[in-house]
Amino acid sequence: MYAVSVSGDFVAQHVLTVPEAGPEGEWHSHRYGVRLEVRGELLDEHGYLVDVDDLTAALDSVVDRYRDETLNDFPEFEGNNPSLERFARIICDRALAELDDPIVDAAAVELREDDVARATYEREI
Image (cartoon, rainbow, N blue to C red; front, side):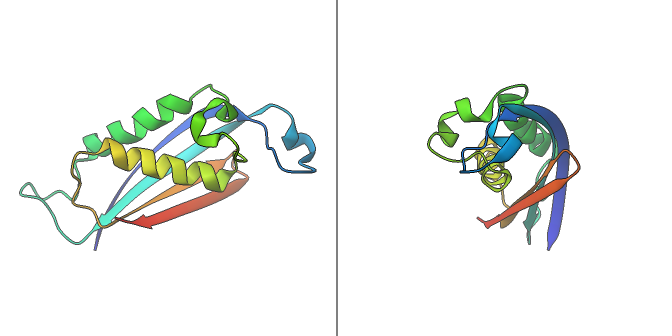
C-alpha cells in the first residue's frame, strides 16, 4: 500500500463545553499541527497515488478556514464540544471533500495541540 502525507500548522481558539472543563472552559488559543495522510493500492497514469500539490491545497484550504478563528463559532461544532478528536475528524472529512476524485482507499489526520496532546482520526473511503 502507498501512503502520501502533507503537514501544516495554525493557531485557533476554542472553549470546551464539557462540565468541569477547568481552564479549558474559558476562551483560549492553541497552536495546532496537522498531518494529513492518504493511502491506497493503486497509482494513476503519472505514478501518483495523489498529486502532492493537490493534497497540500486541500489541507491548506481547510487550515485556512480555521486559522485565527474560534472553533465554537463554526456550524460543524454547533452543539458539540470542540474536542481534539472531533476536530481531527472534521479536518479529514473536509480535506477529502476538497480532492477531485482521489484514488485513495483510506485517509488519516493526526492533529497535535501545543506539542502536548495528539489525536488521530482514520477512515476508509
